[in-house]
Length: 410
Image 1 (cartoon, rainbow, N blue to C red):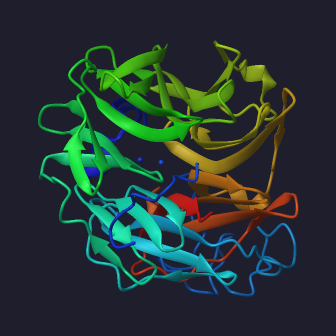
Image 2 (image 1 turned 180 degrees about the vertical axis):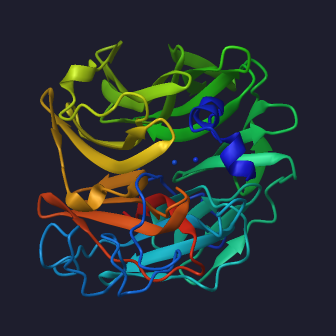
């Protein structure tokens, strides 16, 4: 439960309850609605009547065509998730997409609550759990024992570059944002003393700059302020780029230095609704609600991920519902100022947590929910041939698991 509690404070309130180990040669590729309609209690039986089942020959009501598993992308990818999150923390899990299919990597070491993954190449990836950093060398995942872990940490994101690596998160005891950098194989803390209480959620390299997304939460007024930071390598300090007042931002991305987006939700507890803020030529502007292709109930929707394709073009994922009763996911496309909706039947009854796009291939991952609105099984959609398609996943270790992040390998 630690990660659910640590996730952007207001989201928790609104939902009423998100070479060896070295990555010195790495680069980051870019954190539920509905009810399952099973004919049993939370199983993943291939014969169940849930629209989002895991039948390998699945041409059911939620398919957008008759060839979900045909013509799949040759691109390699990793997805990370959590197994056994029903009512508490769960074991981390890795899924590997290669040769046209996802497989569960059962050789990975035991972890809790995997949160993010970043890959530079097929033989060099990093992932983070609550308190640990793990590395992949094209043969196996291992825990990086050189990372200065502690029991009171929650790690949220990881960034691997060609000459260093970054990890961001939070000191749970002190409610303080934390950041680490690795150079020449050595981890060291980055000064966050000037930042407000809260957490750093995302970190990316945009052009030649390191940018991070953080938040601070007001427990009195139940409001969240999210901020975008740039790291000044000369001074070793964070510089404030923009403040998103009284709004959650869960992800951001840029296409070049002059155009980007930050997505999340605007909130006035207990109501919240998806919001996008676009950066263009030095100015951040909120997208008016009427610009979106579908008007969902504004009492329970949010955007969870974004990938910028080119200046003026991006894909945005999220979920919709009514207060705590979530109903489904959406995939929006923004191009030349116009928003369109992927509008797939299989988007009903799932949550999408993360999206990545490289060249002509895209992945969005999340989970199918059960009748108690907990994750029931992982969900994955692939973008290929100009459209999004449902793709079946292997069975998870238990009846309750989800995918939280995905990375396409360059």
